[in-house]
Length: 277
Image (cartoon, rainbow, N blue to C red; front, side, top):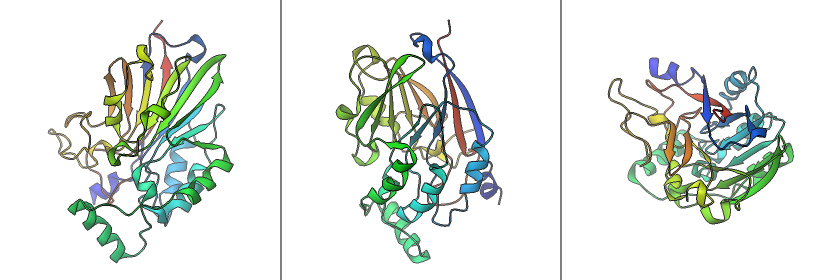
């Protein structure tokens, strides 16, 4: 019962990211990081999500995938995500769950989870109907591509790669060209291990999720399941330094497969950029 309650106890995690070469116009930029919401078809967690975000002030929203458990949750996820607004826009990439064929009945749910335990190949569907709900509301969905925008008089480039855990990430077309301040959105953290350093054209910031922070942690020991080589048992989420870039790994808002969390509360992230000067 406690693990079920903890899965609903949302935390807002505030972090200050110090980037020594941060352009002056980006000083104090506040970014809302949303990941792994795993909205069910019932939409029963949408209100909790919006309540957690309502009092927050931010300039930019970045989403890093797995907004649903399966395609059955597309409508609920769109109802939630299309309510997000920010002065400099909302950018998102997708995770593998956003492509999963819809699961609506208990029998389908059991089959879906058994297939995952067996390592069977998942049945994917085209997420076009989901994207067509998001983009008219101003959410820029990046599928192995990038965008440019201006913030505080500075050129900012945001790339979005697919889910590296299922081979959907195409880093070359997702990486912006050299110039300006570069960020990358990608669902699974291990994509960061294949990126060039910032001095060679790689992003200064990488945002991802996927690990759920372990979702179930053993107090005093850590997370047995992480599904990533970048994170560790004792640190399955947080900020990691990889080849000169900072990689922000969210433990996510939702749950996968079972609606339980232990010693690992759901989160939305609020990050403030600073130069340290």
